[in-house]
Image 1 (cartoon, rainbow, N blue to C red):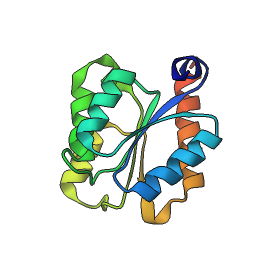
Image 2 (cartoon, rainbow, N blue to C red; image 1 turned 90 degrees about the vertical axis):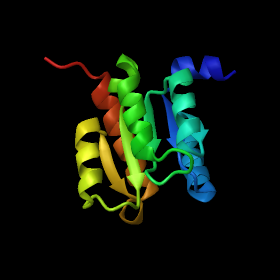
Image 3 (cartoon, rainbow, N blue to C red; image 1 turned 135 degrees about the horizontal axis):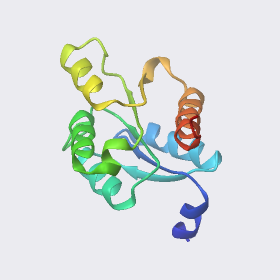
Image 4 (cartoon, rainbow, N blue to C red; image 1 turned 45 degrees about the horizontal axis):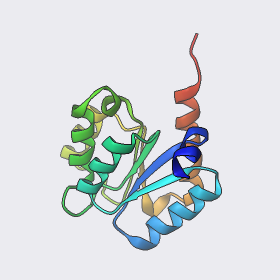
Length: 139
């Protein structure tokens, strides 16, 4: 059934280790008509992303086994799809950290959203914006 759904709907990968937030994101995104894949750590996230090739990845930075920064770098270095898949970082890690800033700049996420100041509704809007940018044609 998921293969049929995936042909008609945008597929998102939510990589988040906090069960309550992951569930809230999943439920909201399903309600918005997306197909939602889930991963609870960076290793699982990389495997799922490379296998399923979602249209967009929502990624926490602080994850067990492999953090979100390492996951993003791995995907960006993997292949053409990995270099271009939109990634939205959703985290409570301060964007003021120099190493974080450098890595974020090098790996070009679509957005860097801070959990404490971003509602799930705003996350949905950013996802829709990024996916519509990706599918629109430029002159």
